[in-house]
Amino acid sequence: MHNNKAVRQSGDGADDKRDTGSPLFSVTQRDIAIPTPDGFPLAGTLFEGDGRKPLVLISSATAVPRGLYAAFAKASVEAGARAALVYDYRGTGGSVRPKGWEKRIGMKDWALRDLPAAAAALDAIAPGHEMVGVGQSYGGQALGLCGISGRFKRYGMVATMSGYLGDLNDRWAGPRMMLVGVPLSYLFTDMPRWMGLGEPIPASVFRDWARWCRHRHYFFGDPSFAETARYRNVRTPILAFGLTDDIWGTPKAVAALMRRYENAPVEERWISPEDAGGQQIGHLGFFRSRFADVLWPQFIGWLLDATPVTLGERRKP
Image (cartoon, rainbow, N blue to C red; front, side, top):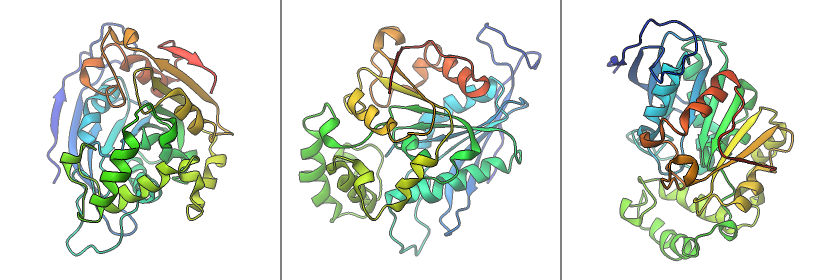
């Protein structure tokens, strides 16, 4: 079902740069079904405009629905992106299991199958057009696994880190995951919302995640996950934002993941609440609309035009 809806009107539509804060381009949005090679349809929302700047693919954090990123996607298209796509990984949000689906859903499927399928759907809007990527938490980890990193001109990451429990600043994360979450995962098909993870995710995905989080090297320590070797093939420029008030994406956890992008140019910048007008940001706050005026403009400028970023403090990965 393609219900086109105009969400913002532009001014004169000129392809120039202004500092007024007003959108340069009008935007339409529609929900789309994204096919995958193994037949699991994904739910996506596509934002389109008349700009000529890159396509923007946004890949979410674990247990976070695509709706969180809709305002950022729209802002990117208003700034001149040709189109932006947000989508739900299989088994989450609007990407529900097809009737009769019996295959196991693994966390690595999100990176190996779903991200490439979403990129293909976005590419179909303007075949061969320059594409950039955005990934929050798992969505940034997925770049190194997906096998199509070369399709992205640039890739921006927010709160992307190794999930090893020992690197987090949350003393209860381990007990919650191992003593409560894992036993519950054998009782439910999907992890219940009341467990506090966020939106429901497949219990099989949760068990994968928990297994990796126990290991000092996260999923790089999983001998059955051969695709982690793809990390060394990534040469896409990366801008990685850390948040100083993120108890999960600590400097140690972020550095542990960024080191794996050994052949890619990585710029790591740390944003504090002071950079956000004194408001707390945390692990999932960056893409909330209240930060649209203070955190998003430089990020969008880097994504669409490779404009240097001064937001936050730069740290050597």
